[in-house]
Image (cartoon, rainbow, N blue to C red; front, side, top):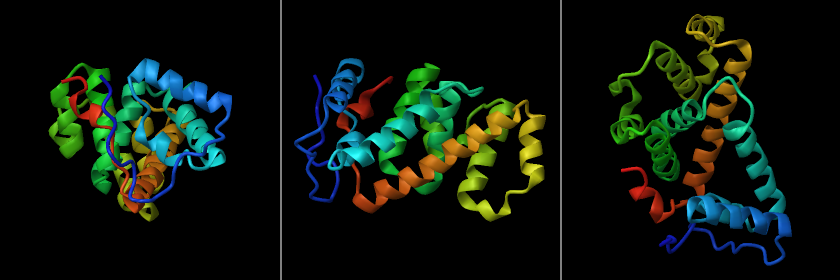
Amino acid sequence: MTRQSAKTTALDLSPAEDLSEGVRAYFDKCEEKLGMIPNVLLAYAFDEKKLQAFIDMYNDLMLGASGLSKLEREMIAVAVSSVNHCYYCLTAHGAAVRQLSGDPALGEMMVMNYRAADLSARHTAMLDFAVKLTEAPDKIVEADRQGLRDAGFCDRDIWDIAATASFFNMSNRMAAAVDMRPNDDYHAMAR
């Protein structure tokens, strides 16, 4: 049974009443696949143009063609969100890490401190880069990119790591600004 959080954000912005059939179908697909409409989508639904831009970017980064696995992209989302203390993204993407990895402990370690997890050198390099990009973007230098190459990432992968980290930095800031709340269902997923 789907349980929606009482309030999606601290702002009083209701979903537009004239959402297109395409968006309504997308929401229906979310209900079918996830058992809920993620609150982040409902938060953006007051303006269909903003919602569609968010959906397009998210789907491209997280589901599109990439040398990064879905789990790796979710791990980046969680590592970045951990640095930013983003309650929404840690809850939602922590659940995704638990689900995709089949390891609830990994999901919890990623939320708290990815360095506590028993990660491969490849994943450590990936997350170290994403965290440095989050904490000190002006300090990224060629040696950081070369470190990713040395860990087995190609230049396209480096782009995808940076794009995913950048997207979640933006999303974390929006979630903090509007006090976005995760769907209650995320808390129990893949435990």
